[in-house]
Image (cartoon, rainbow, N blue to C red; front, top):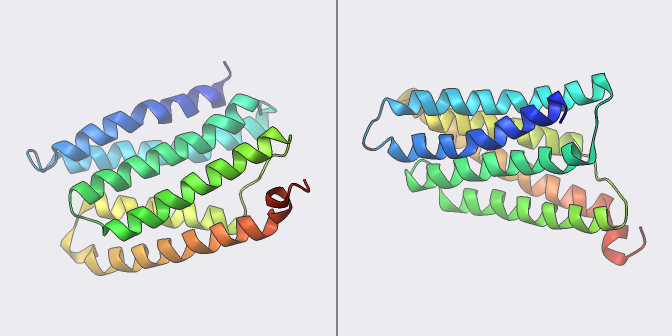
Length: 178
C-alpha cells in the first residue's frame, strides 16, 4: 500500500477517535481541545494524501474510492456528534448528510460506467467551509457563536449549490447517456 493510501486510512482510523472525544465532552469539557486537534489532523490529511498521490504518480483506484469516503465519514461523524452535543441545528446536519449520500450514490453509478466524477470548485469550497465550520463548532467558544451561524448558513448554501451543480453537470449519467 502506498503512502497516500496509508494517510487516507489514518484519516478513517481517526474518525472513531474523534467521535469518542466529542461524545465524552459533556463529562470532560477539556476533551474538546483534543477533539479539535484530532479533527484538524484528519482534515489536513485530506489535503496531503491527494496532493502526494498526484505529485508522486501514485493515484490508485483504492485512493479514488477511499479518499472521498474518508472525507464523508469524517464530516458526517463530526456533524452527528455535534448535533448530539446541541452545537448544530439538525436541519444543517440533514442537508449535508443527505447531499453526501446522494453524491456517493451518483459516484457509484458513474464508477459502474467507468466514469470518475471529479470534485468541482464549488464542491471544494463547500468542503473547506464545512471543515472550518466543524472546527469552530468543536471549539465552542462564545465569541465565535455568530461566525458559527454564518458558517452554518454558508455551508448549507454551498452544499445545496454543489449538489445542484453536480447533478446538472452530470445529468447524462442520470439519463443513461454516459
